[in-house]
Image (cartoon, rainbow, N blue to C red):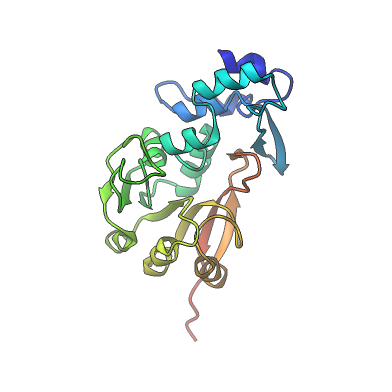
Length: 238
């Protein structure tokens, strides 16, 4: 593969055995980004380096990679705005412990598809059909039902999943405030970052505790995306 020789000079994102796509499953986004050079930035998490830039490689190599679509924007629009690795899928499966999932703002359904391949039941929703959203141009990868954040009301027994909700958008806060369950899995930046709005993070801080973070989550260079699980605090009975 063309990416392999380019990545040889530094550790690559998917070099560990447990980061290989399991037999019988398909993760085309990971099959591309797992060859990219990466450096740790938070504990065991990895940040992909901007290896396509001409400052990293010669211009002809950069042009060839660009034609292959191996750049952040095309890959995000085609698949998902947050990378889901095999390690992430295994980590989420463990956190869920057999629970079903409702995903709000599923986009093309790429994350839902990855979880479904691991045997996890996902009800995925997005208000925009694929192709009508300039940030999601391919797919769908699986069944994505047309509805907004209010769809969470129909699945209160499921864990809530949200991946890279729109910056300054209200959907993440709306979903979280409508959700009565006790388990949230969230992929995105933190307060002050490029996902959701301040009201969402304030609600998260007021009512939820972080109970774990995927140690094998991989993100793009300069983007502080984390995949974390949160549990609702027990409501006071006094």
